[in-house]
Image 1: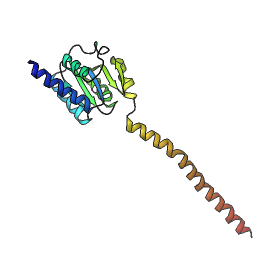
Image 2 (image 1 turned 90 degrees about the vertical axis):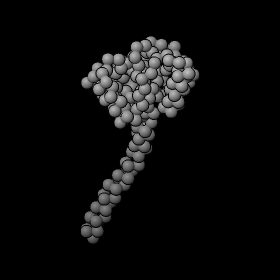
Image 3 (image 1 turned 45 degrees about the horizontal axis):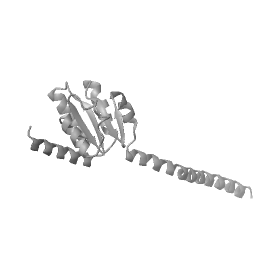
Image 4 (image 1 turned 180 degrees about the vertical axis):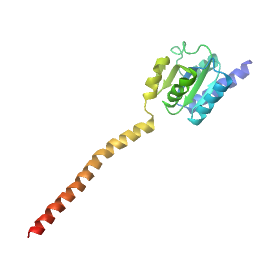
Length: 172
């Protein structure tokens, strides 16, 4: 591959790194063409971008992007498929779902919420990370809970007061 071609690929990877806030490095070696096609379809359905690039080119793109790649040295071996997403746990859910039937892809490393996760044993941890929208939903439901309790108490109290007043008026 010519040096010019490599620099074009590195710049495209850098653009992708800027567009997405999270990435997962997976080992997809051993998947046949049909399985790779199914994985790509599943990625597209879940708003995850999948790239298969040379590890050295991805490493150079990360370095140019300002990421320290020393911790990723072990993950950037063999064939790698890079999954990019703006939702931190979407690729982890995808990996977990797809690998049940296919044994691959295997997580090598992930960069999620400004933290680095290494090894395939981190998939369950990454699945449990809540996305920004899930956290906002949790906060809204927590904020609504006291207001719902007050409204409920006022409504039930109103029927009680009405019952007492009705009983008193019937006695007179």
